[in-house]
Image 1: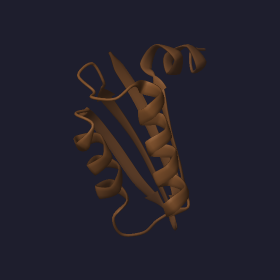
Image 2: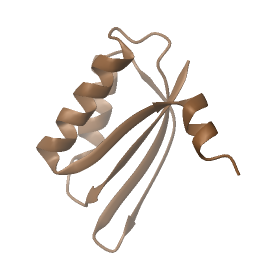
Image 3: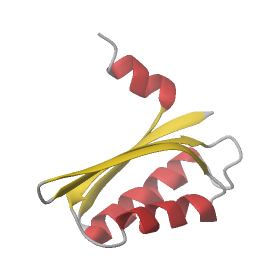
Length: 89
């Protein structure tokens, strides 16, 4: 089972570390990652494997959202099939 994580906000040190630490702690594997900085804004999209996660999808989403609030970022996770459906032309 795969999911897509998006991170958007003002650039600062430690964003990737904060997100990847949560994922590692929950046994979520990062399959692909793309990040860029557009002026002072940080954007990142991660494709992750949640099939061996040690917590539920809902709990993971809550942890990521909480970390986003702490860092003044928008961090969202969606199941891959929902993400694909929403972005299909």
